[in-house]
Structure formats: C-alpha cells, structure tokens
Amino acid sequence: MRSAEQLDVLVVGMGFAGITAARVLADAQLRVHLIDRRDHIGGNAYDEFDAAGVRIHRYGPHIFHTNSDRVLAFLSRFTRWRPYEHRVLANIDGELLPIPINRTTINRLYGLALDEPGAAAFLERVRVPRDPVATSEDVVLNSVGRDLCDRFYRGYTRKHWGLDLSDLAAGVAARIPVRTNDDDRYFDDRHQCMPADGYAAMFARMLDHPLVSYETGVDFAAVRGACGERHLVYSGPIDEYFGHCFGPLPYRSLEFRHEHLPETSRFQPVGIINYPGADVPFTRIVEFKHLTGQAHAGTSILREFPRAEGEPYYPIPRPANETLFRRYQALAAECRDVTFVGRLAQYRYYNMDQVVGAALAAGSRIVERVGRR
Ligand code: FAD
Ligand code: UDP
Image (cartoon, rainbow, N blue to C red; front, top):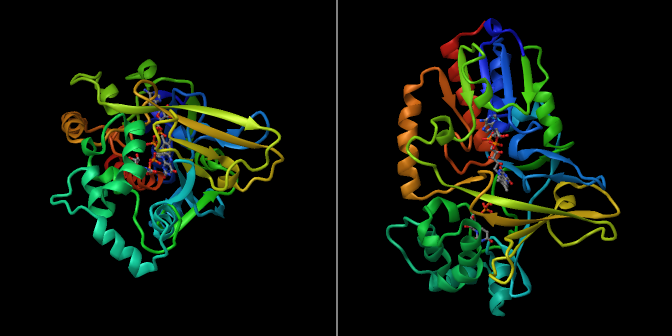
C-alpha cells in the first residue's frame, strides 16, 4: 500500500460500488487504495472460468440491464458488450411457462386462445383490487389475482425469502412486470447486455489507473484507523461498520451449488428456469452458456438454495428492517469523513446499474468535499 500521507481515499469493498467510486476519484486525480476481504475483485458480480473452462458467475447469475445512458456510457469505457435479452421459464408442475406472466403464460396454463385485449380482459377479471398496495402480496393480487399468485409467486417467495409475500415490501414483487402481449423478456430496460469478456475483466480495467492500488484478502477490521486516509468509502454491511450496536440487520443468504455436465452441450432452453414448487429445495437453475454466448462441448449449471445464515446477499425489504436501517443511517450521517455506498451499506435491493449510479454520484460528492488535486 502507498504511504499513509499520500492516501486520499480508502475504499472498503471491491464490488460495483467500491470500484466505480474509486475510478471516479482517481479520474479526479485523488489517490485511492481499495481492500476486499475476499480473495478476488468484483464482489458478487465476479465471474471466472470453472475447471472445465466454462465462464460461470460464482455468486449467481448477473445480467446487466439499465435505462440509464449515463451508467452504460461509464461502464462502456471499460468493456465492449454482447447483446443479451434474458428469458426465464417457470416450472409449474412440470410445464415450462414464461415468467413474467404474459399472454402465452395465460393461454398455455388455462388452455385458452386469447388475443392481447383478451388477455388484458382476463387479468381485469381475475385481479383482486387492493388499496393501498403496501406489500408484495398486494402487488401480485392487484395485478394477476389469486391463482396466478399462488402458482408463480407465493411458493417461490416463501422459499427465496423464508417469508410470505404479505411480509415483504411492495417493491420486491414489483420488480417483475406483468404483460398482456407475447414479450417474454425478463427485463423491460432499454439496454440489456453482458460485458463481452466478462465482469472480472471489466473490473480489472476500471482499476487500471496510476492513482489506484488495491489488496484482496484484507478485512477492514485489520486496517481500520491505520491507513491515514482523508476520506473512507465503505461498501460493506452498514450494521457491521457500527459493531451491530442496534442489533444485526437481517440479510438473506444463498448456497450456490455449481455443476459441470461434460456430455451435455445444452441443459435447458433458456438461461434460467425458476422452480416455485415446494417439491424441490432450490429456487432456480441457471445455465451460464445462454448468458455468455460461450461455445463449449459441455455446459455448467447452478442451483440456488436459499439460506437464513451465511454471506449477506440480499437486504430483506420489510418495514421493521427499514426502521432498524434508519437508525444505522442516522449514525452514518454523523460520519462526515465516511461515505456509505452499495447494496449492503445502503441496505437497498439494488441492481448493478443502480449501484453504479449511486457510486458515480457518491464519487462526485467526495471530489467536491475532499477537493480535486
Ligand atoms: P458487493 O458486490 O456485495 O461488494 C461488496 C464487497 O465488500 C464484497 O466483495 C465484500 O467482500 C466486501 N466487504 C464487505 N465487508 C468488508 C470488510 N469488512 N472488509 C473488506 N471487504 C469487505 N444485479 C443485476 O443488475 N442483475 C442481476 O442479474 C443480478 N443478479 C444477482 C444475483 C444474485 C444471486 C445476487 C446476490 C445479486 C444479484 N444482483 C444483480 C445484484 C448485484 O449483485 C449487486 O447490485 C451488486 O453486485 C452490488 O455491488 P456492491 O459493490 O454494492 O456489493
Ligand atoms: N418472484 C416470484 N416468482 C418468480 C420470480 C420472482 O415470486 O418466478 C418474486 C420473488 O419474491 C423474488 C422477486 O419476485 O424474490 C424478485 O425477483 P427477481 O427475479 O428480481 O429476484 P433476484 O434476481 O433479485 O433474486
């Protein structure tokens, strides 16, 4: 690491939040040092080749999608893109149906032949109007009614979060659109693409700057207060920063079980198949070659098993947790020399592009405060 007096900003965490902020700061001529307690860069978006040579995402499938031209332009400095429109099927009692629910889903599930106005009228008939729309159950009942809710959402949500839909904030289920046409893409965003040679390569280029240095395998706890930085960017869990003084913030974890199938070139018809049923303990199966476009004689898949304990992957959006987060946030507001940014530090169910947007803004604010060199 550079000598203490030279260091302008120490960045804790080398995911999208930390690396984006670091690059903004270095571009403004500030000296930045990053640390991560994992043994690699990239945070949860890290990708790598498995032993068989298939590119996989160690911490679950990461598909880039955004409506922000600014975020896309920033990342495009560091990567070319491969167009990729993500599609997901749900395994409903053995039948594979499009999710988000669309006209095809309704027609195939109920043996109908509705046109688009017919599908809209169908949903209007089955929906259960809710006012206010406060929980994820309200969102789903209000748009697709009870039967589709129970088949596509309730079991999946129970498995993924360990909670009923009615215990989760509206924003969770509202991530998934509902359509009456045949559009079967998972996302609505204007830009949908994957970094052409992977996320890790993109992150390495973001870090390639004369004013940036970094170390992996270093926990903040080991260097806290010892780096002499003028400002700290922290992208780890906010409750951990404050020693869990108000008690732990709840996070949901996952166990990732990767598998390579040497004799199978294609395992499933789309990148992800969701399994809402209680008959299997995992929520979804990912086949990475769909996402990356890689040609390989075999294929690599991933099953995700939700866990209450383990690495914090998901903040759990519900009112009690938001109240607890606000208490930590009030402490954070007192720390003038620390910026909290990222999914864990802001306790927000952010996608990658939202984290980049937050880190771009945070970086600019820090430059204003610490001063350009
Ligand atoms: P992270 O990537 O979690 O990085 C934080 C880093 O901080 C970690 O590497 C951690 O090791 C380090 N750290 C924490 N505490 C310390 C400490 N004390 N000392 C040192 N280092 C520390 N988003 C999408 O847009 N599209 C998707 O398809 C998508 N799929 C996802 C699938 C899964 C299974 C998950 C879990 C998330 C997915 N996301 C997706 C969300 C995406 O992962 C996040 O938005 C993004 O990676 C968050 O970046 P971050 O930098 O805030 O956090
Ligand atoms: N969801 C569901 N059934 C599905 C897909 C999603 O019930 O087939 C719900 C579930 O509560 C999930 C949320 O919608 O957690 C958001 O889904 P998304 O695919 O955005 O989750 P992520 O990819 O972040 O795990």
